[in-house]
Image (spheres, rainbow, N blue to C red):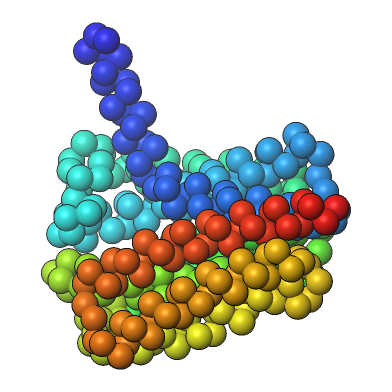
Length: 294
């Protein structure tokens, strides 16, 4: 591969990294889950267009987040090699890239899905970029604000396919909202020193580790029954219910153990990693259950 091709590949990789592809892929999975759950449906072409629009909107929000937090990212090991803090990209390029993605994605959502989905997309985008991002340096309550745009994608998937805000979509919103809180607390516990050095007001930085472990436990206690709602409400069946119960018991056991034994970073890292597995298996189980019942 010649130098020109390597340069193009590196530039494309930097643009992709601005969109935070791992986070964006999680959003796509949950959005698709909302679509799959709906008894109505878009044509395959419009489903793909809507999912691409959601991906573009999330990518644009993440690019603007990278632009706003470029100085903070220089102070954290996990973010200092991103294109902006590493100096590989002009910040104005990232700014306009984020704006362009949002400017294309929102109208696409409006025309390929519907006005409700586009409105929810607007709320998610502006909350994430203009409320959550600046609030992170002021208060740990930012995690509650950030959980709102993080929980909207499955509801957007439901409204895209169904055209209305219905109970199943709201249940998925509630699951995602509550799932994010122990997830956020876990990562902020094992990266507490980095967050403090960067001036980010995470829960462990402002309230301490013991309060953080107790809040992680409290949010996990709230999450477990909410994950069972799809079965209780007839949205899903016994297979999903049993799966959710087992996963919830594991998550709750880990949270109780951490709180009682006053565990530290290794435990928090395990909780963080399990939370990703928890959500992935939960949604996979939901898809399978709903698919088998159709």
